[in-house]
Amino acid sequence: MGLRLKNSSTSIIRSLDIVYAMEHWYNSGKVDRARVDVSYQKRAAGSTITSLLSGSGTWTAIPNLGVDAPSTATVIASRDGNSISNRRVKQATLSDINLAPGEEIMIRWSYLLNNTTNGNGLSIDDVTISAFTNVFYSKTAGNIELATNWSSTPDGTGALPGNFSFSLPNATYYVQGNTITSGSNASSRINGTNAGVWTVNGANSRVVIGLPGATTPTRLYLFNDDNIVGKVDVSSNAALAIQQPNYSFTLGQLDNTSTVEYYTSSSAMNIAPLAYGNLKLTAAGNKVLTGNTLVNGTLTFATGPDLFLGDYNLTIQRGGGISGTTSSSYIVTNGIGRLSQTVSNSGADVLFPIGSSATSYTPALLQQPNSTTARNEDVFSVRVIDGLFRRYDADGNGVAGTEVLAANVKKTWLVDEEVTGNSDVKMTLQWNTADEVSTGDDQTRFDRTKAYIGHFINRPNLPPTYDKAVV
Image 1 (cartoon, rainbow, N blue to C red):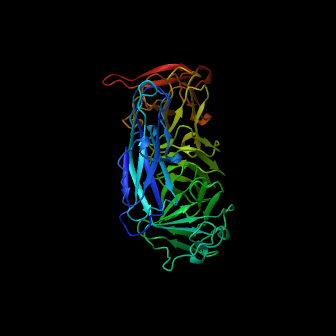
Image 2: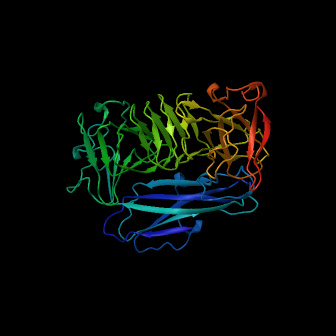
Image 3: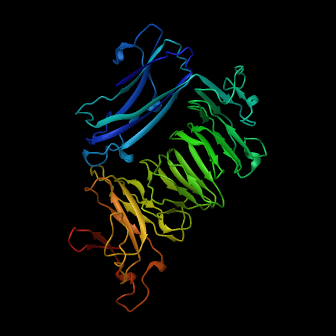
């Protein structure tokens, strides 16, 4: 598939930003060449690109847009390509493309479907391509709201145009510099030691933290009285640390190797519902999801916060992970939201560090047997609620009047797999002494020596049953 674009304006297009989603709709179980690759070809004014074939001209690969099929180790079956676990969003910026008026560029997506070597059902969706005619670079130090700290070249020597402002249309403002400290106004690069706002409001304009493909770290820190008005992207190996609890900017494209850090020590802070590279939660102030959220890399807990899901789902993408959780810093499933992670057939435990409240850490660990042939890898979603019940509603909440208080733990772990069947899960559950029924006689008090896991099976029009499993 290809998209042919022509610069019909009177300005040189200096860069193109490309975003798309690859979706996996059928898993054949074959990994060879199970990937989508992207390349481009550029032609001079007056010359037309008419073919997508490799021999039709010089095609330049865009490595950051290539992506492997995500679910080849799972059950051989149709998949839901719209599911977040079977979908991969890729983004790349073609810098210095310098597409002159009248010139064309073709963006080509390629997937070699072959029943012998792959046979997977892959598609692309949600393609967006944005053109930028103005590109500017901040210096590595100094206040970024001041025009004197900006240049037309990354090294800071390029002169700015006479009409330079932060209201230009189709402009990209790259922020450079590595602020390694946090927690003080002096570390912020907006208005020095005073509260300040940096506004970037040109049509189709954006702020980008870090340069595309840069290996030098970039980190921008915002103190709690500083803010940005505009759209903010975060490039590869770059970081944005937000201590402003009432931030007003919109987070846009976040590279899979980027980091967004939410930093607050007292008041709660909302987490924007996005697809993150790495997500870091710092200091003791609670962090709260405001929509379904995806983490492609690592979710890090630092210095004691809890993350409250509410009614929203948190997904850790295959290859990602969670670090820094403790019995006092974890994911709180205080609504119908769930934590989803891939449990592969590696024989290793996958920790779901959850609790039903900020004072009740009751995690689950899931494990699939180590195998090179079994196709039991799957994505599991877990939440925990208070109480054990004879009846549960459609959302997994216990039905009032059906609570069980007879030699049991007063918790229910709700565990779902994305593709039903073929799993062979070993489950470990943890609870607190206070969660055990401790009143009554020997028949009603919980006895750990007789403990087992009960699997609730809801059968329409029949009483529910529990399968027993040894703890």
